Amino acid sequence: MNARRVTVAVAAAGICSFSLLYAPQPLLPQLAAEFGLDPGAASLAVSMGTGGLAAAVVPIAVLSEIVGKRPVVIVSVLASALLGLVLPFAPSYEVLLVLRVLQGIAIAGFPGVAAAYLTEVLGRAGVAGAVGAMIAGNTVGGMLGRLVAGGVTERLGWHGALAVVGGIGLLCALLTVATLPRVPRASRRDREGAGGVGEATESLGSKLRAVLSGFRVGLRRPVLWAQYGVALLAMGSFVALYNAAGFRLTGDPLNLSPAVASLVFLCYAMGSVSSATAGRLVARYGRMRCLLMSLALTAVGAAATVWGSLAVVIAGFVVFTGGFFAAHAVANGWAAAEAPTQARASASGLYTLAYYLGSSVGGTVGSIVYGYAGWTWLVGTVAVWLGCAAAGVVLLARRHASETV
Image (cartoon, helix red, strand yellow):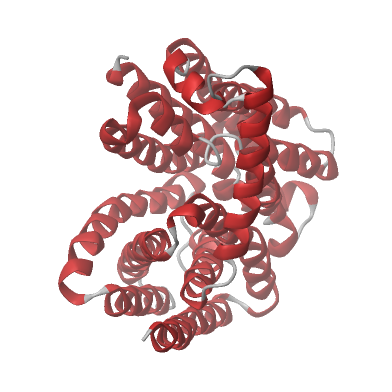
């Protein structure tokens, strides 16, 4: 098996999926002006996509155990890219939102299945490098979709911006289809058993029972609930601030052009640095201390964006972004480490569900707060959410520690 080919395929799939998922975010002011919307209603263009993903990620992961993981990934990238090309032709905002829900459901096939597919194709020993490429593709895709859409909207309008990102998504999807290898026959035989259809069916039934059992275990441990809470509240805070960032940067007193305002998404590059740094610091200072510090940095960065100075606002977004990705890295790793072996996949699925549910609900609620009360109240709301996440970590992690003594 050519590991480089696998790496190219999953990186392309990550760029496709996440460039399409978040492309509308820098276009929210233009969508609001076009359809006469307030910021809360405009934010649904993002939230409906992430909400569709959140609703579908677990069912699709279970479905992949029946139909196979490679077909799910291929259908995911192709369907999401084709929907991306249809979006610019939506005749109304309501149709646009329906298409975004469908696109989110389509996108769910990649993050819900990719890691398990890589393990089947490369084995546990060879999966680390490909997972790194997948995460890099996800990050690059999220940043690329936002930058491209925001950069071309002045010339092409929001229709043209979404069409350009849709074209990029389709090219990446076709690259994935051309390079994504099939699962080796030996792996399929190991998965299905050597006794034919009967044993394969029995094995499938056992796997589904194991999945359900894993979900029950993943919902019983207080320390895992703490990490789901971080995923929900921190991601909600993150998307809420970035949903309103276009309104904040293009309005008074900063008055930037949409293309220049979209450059704020370059702050995402800080996430790669901070998440890697947090991973190294956990071994030295412990998970709880690193997670609480990361959440505190996220809140401090959000507070800095209240200032009227552009330099301070951008510095605030840099700190805010770095703090969030560090918290996400620590919480995600903590959930994986604390989950029992039979519940690791389920804990990962529940964490992903909470993460995108936070993106959908928190992003919309935050935009409503901004539309009615302004940026300062939005930052205050975000600070409360982050404080609740930190309190949950302290209370539930300590409860877990006392129960295991």
